[in-house]
Length: 387
Ligand code: SF4
Image 1 (cartoon, protein in one colour):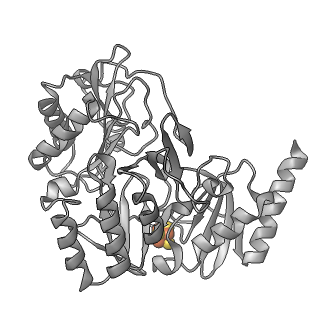
Image 2 (cartoon, protein in one colour):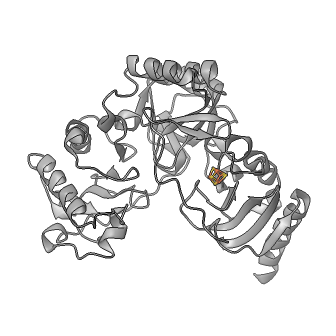
Image 3 (spheres, protein in one colour):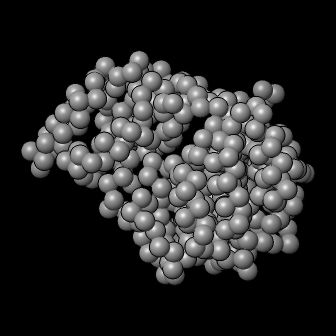
């Protein structure tokens, strides 16, 4: 199956995107956090002007869905007046994700502040271009989509690394801003006129990176993040990455801030009481399933991806040890990763493949929902028999 071309840009608050259920805007929380009052305000706006459903994205952003041409300007004004989003385009559209447990007094926090401050001085960058700040003693973000990674080496020295390169170069807080601008300049001048390489990893696989930019390895201690308790925090997820206004209100009413982080997880103080609607353990079967908005959220879909995800999550026999991706069409925008099982909607029925992407050639096509569930159970039985 041919991979559908992505739109090549992402929505922001200043640039809404039309979808099957109306306009979508994407809020990129500053420093990957929303204060409780900001989260409550967003929930109210989603209920009043949107359709009450919000998406949590791969890069820790929050999308309000279902706005209209008339309601969008009202929402934008309220977000800007509430200091939730920026009027400045460069700051509003900056793709920046911070390591999950970063503190306000850390070096990483100061680097994030510097990036917001110099965003207006950046050269033109493709819409998906982004930064990951991950300069603690363990790295959390190495699987997260980013083009420039701010990390530390084994001795704790600050490092800037281009995505796709094993090594980066040492910087310091004093020279950080200048070094970032230097790195961005290299990205721009190494392109051809048409900006063929929209992401850094594409560029570095085609153009030799000067040694001055790739001479120091980052620290090798890696850490992953899944739902569960971590020290004085709870890491949790909303099923299939969609949160309702009531759920957002429920969380915001019990905490001072919500951290938006990788793997579509949120982090709050462990004093927060979360209902069973949320995923608080990596063993929750719903956590194995990634689903795009599907029908009616996206006009490209002919299946109800979230409804199907819920049904599959109740068929525990299908799910053990498997990652699922349910995609409304072969564009596969909800995950860039391979999944053990991939279900793709086409003309109201389902295609199925294993160990691949939504755009790969399916092994089964045009399955009804009942036939699909049967095939999933068969796959699981085949696996058990093979053991
Ligand atoms: S993958 Fe899902 S969200 Fe993306 S275009 Fe297709 S149906 Fe829409």
